[in-house]
Length: 347
Image (cartoon, rainbow, N blue to C red; front, top):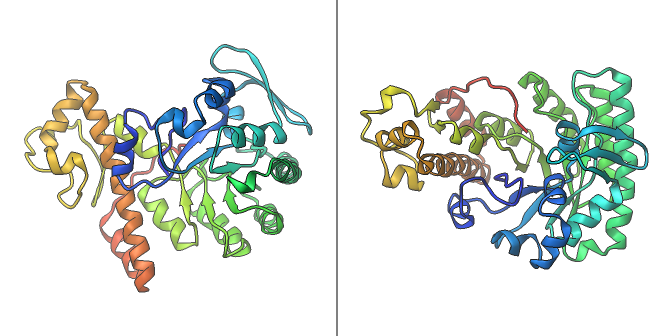
């Protein structure tokens, strides 16, 4: 899912996002409640109409942003109080209001409010936050049912537990029993080594119901998509592909490249000859290099289209391979030629 945090995938028109193969996008409750606010979204006829997107929208609960962006954050059993990163104004969010906001502005997939703690953290801190996430999910389910949200939306719960295998297992067992339409896995891709993330998935995924989507939150590098699907993940989101693109980092079959490097100035061929995106079909690497060196906005737009299309093509390849029973060999072929770059995790 491309990320449109504030109701837009940065630099791109909705039809351009759709052209990459995206079927659903993600927006964020924390940002939308602060700006433009619920009143504006309702007056506009809902989030989809406001942003001109005719497909499904998933809205994250805002829990991650409260703890990463909100100032003077205070967590109680009742909910969270925090100060806006925009103007310092004080706000509150609890499980019930989180659900009401998302249902009222028309989210198709509504995320439950969870308690996320930054890592590293001691085991007791993670335990308290994980158990609070479980209790908050119960309140989210009750409010969602009260609003008859299931007639328009789907509610997803979130598994937490840090990097502790026993807490991850317990959280997954709780989520597997909850009255939710989908199961998200949060609190990963936050700086832990990739083998640790894979280990947590191997613990959690087999516990979650096979008839409900499994959503790994905040993961979007090509190699991590393959790793996640290999372990049973169905949905992903991340700002990574578009954020990298706006900085000139573009995906290719061999790995990530920096289009601003001088070696691309004379490459009068597509960035990726196998890619069918607008950037590769209509323009050369030399031209896109020129756009970035000249700080032209078109470069950011074409780079974003390319990276989103690259990931969509990876997913299409995986889906086809699963259908033909050749996923293992397709995964091996990807690993054989793609060279990942270790970067700080983004969410």
